[in-house]
Image (cartoon, rainbow, N blue to C red; front, side):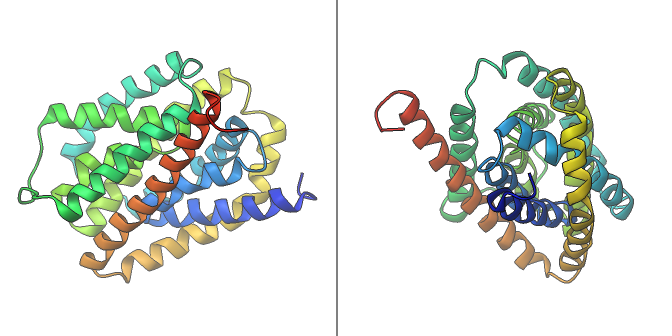
Length: 256
């Protein structure tokens, strides 16, 4: 597989993106799976990256072990259990293109509202909001490895301190990634062949993980939030476009 130049290029860029995402620039990681899916089937791309993410999670959890918001985790993680279970139950019914369209629409709408809408001052939302968006984030993460838009709807408006935000993101998605192991294993994608691919890509992933740590520490908070929203918009728009094109193809409106 590594003799295939398309796979090699997409795999290296995808691993670079997930490394930076695990270092703290989370939104950019959503582009990794669609990119790798250009060279391998989408479910295989998810499985290859999941095995890398599980190792990166250990590194990131240690790095941000003192920086997190306990209240948000307490309300979002129960929702995450529901979301992963729901994804396992209906994942074969809901097409990837429909999921991408939903994810992209949520992300684009959210960022446009932040940029052009009239937002309330930073504050803590309700616990019900945390459960709902935690479930949505885990659902989209399990199906399409794109859990940041629903997560961001709940968390970003709170304007948490930068490192506390990154630590909360890290712990939440580390838990979700651990939950994803069971359905992926049941589907037969956590196999020896995919594990070998993940192991070859892992050193680059760890290196870019630390690059992400370095960049987060040196990025001013206001700039960090501007980057986070911009990344969210660009990636969400790209995912939404993929969903629209794929859905129209499925309906026979445009040629395959």
